[in-house]
Image 1: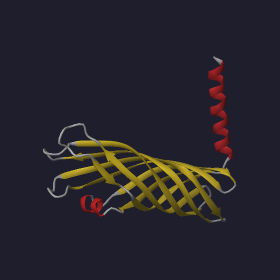
Image 2: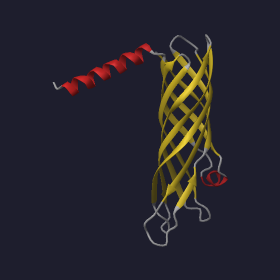
Image 3: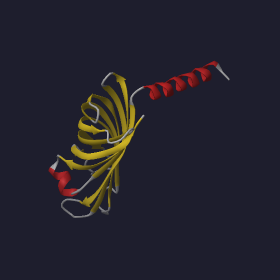
Image 4: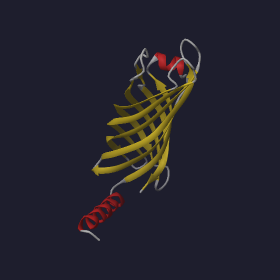
Amino acid sequence: MSFCMKNQYFLLLCTFFCILHADTYTTVRGAYYYPTSSRFREIYSDASIYELELDMSVYDDLYAWISYGTLIASGKSIPFGCETELFILPLKLGLKYCLKGEYLGVYSGLGAVGAYTKIQNNASFANQRRTSWDLGGVAKLGAILYPAHGMVADLFLDYTYLRAHFSNSRPNVVNLEAELDGLAVGVALGWNY
């Protein structure tokens, strides 16, 4: 085994023990997504977002977190009423500060968002599919409940700022910018290690 390979295994092993030693929890999150753009609401009336999140204490009550999720919405385009679908795959990471009691904790945090966005149109005269990779930000507020030993329930409110820029190389086709900002209100369930 090479020296570099041994170092990688050692680093992986150290990371694993740090996660076991630190206050860490994993949650599955589900939320109603309320877009701030009136055009988004006209086209895609309802949207939900589902995520998997990992939180790890890095210093006292300061936590680093990372989440990956999916938002899928369908609707009718304006003004023609053709079917359209929106897929957003956000990867979020950041820091949050948590004040914890015995059965309840509250937190606030900030982070960055990297998202793959795809719009699928079912109209013959429009681009059938547009995709984009974009960056944004997220602000988080929430309350964590500890209903039983090791269990975690999280009531949260997340605001995501995200603009998708769809460019096109075809002639006579307009480039598109979509405002995907929104407020997610939801609940998460998980396990504290």
